[in-house]
Amino acid sequence: MKRIFAGMFLTLAMMVQAVADERRNFSIEDVIAGFEEKQLFYFELLLQNGKYTKGFNKCLGSRPSAPEWIRQHCKKNPELKNAFQCSEDSQLTHVWFIYENAGQCEEVRGPMKDKMDALLAE
Image (cartoon, helix red, strand yellow):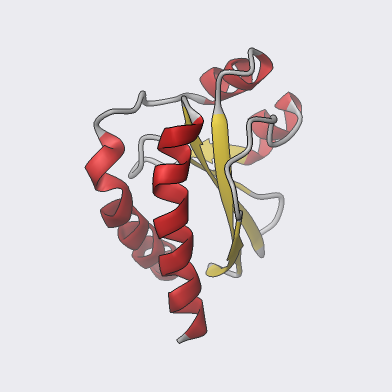
């Protein structure tokens, strides 16, 4: 399973590398505060047993979950500045990609979702 995650995140890392240097390296508390202040946007990819199952069709400006749930179930992905992995069990993982504006978010979301959907269809 860790090997699947590593491969998936390596693929994701390559896809977002072009804009990675332009973003802040968010912490969990930055994310919680940023959504409270309505200053962040995100999209989500869902992984079932380490395999991609679906992704968001647009970026959202609403908070992805309650602050306590985020603190308890989410951790920073060390390979990607703006990615967080969240799960309550070993089967379903939410991967949130968080940006400071909707334009940055959409710039990455569309191509990433298209690529992941294409890999799913193979």
